[in-house]
Picture 1 (cartoon, helix red, strand yellow):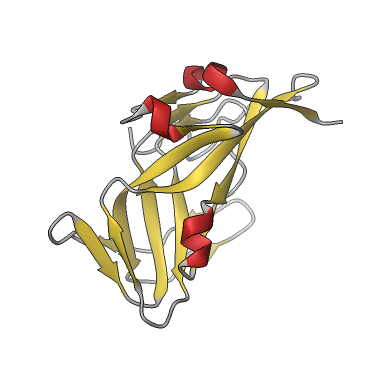
Picture 2 (tube, helix red, strand yellow):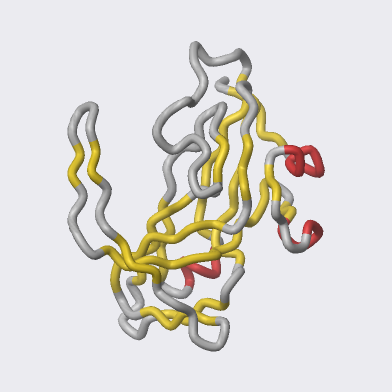
Length: 162
């Protein structure tokens, strides 16, 4: 076994900036809110040790909502996640997003990561979606590792968006 799922109020040690603890704290994780949405304006370039991230343009909300057509967007979460060296996190879309025809994809949040994370949101519903600013759109689950990893995260995204 890789580790043990962390549940309950202990999760609050790893996330800052929750708007409503009782609403965002779930049986198996914490709901994260969308705070910004971006459109891609150029291509990215990925090499073995290099990267050139695509240019993005922020989509401004209108009347505290984003009305988004079909397409792919980069999103930023409102909360800051700070993982100790023996905890990793995995991110999954909330079921309401999937049932609305919207997929949210995240990477593994490595032990040692600190930052306000980002994800990819793909609107597949041909009619689009309307999302209120600060809507809960993903659930982050936390796993305590059975043993410390050989190294903790210290890469390019450590401290992102702080």
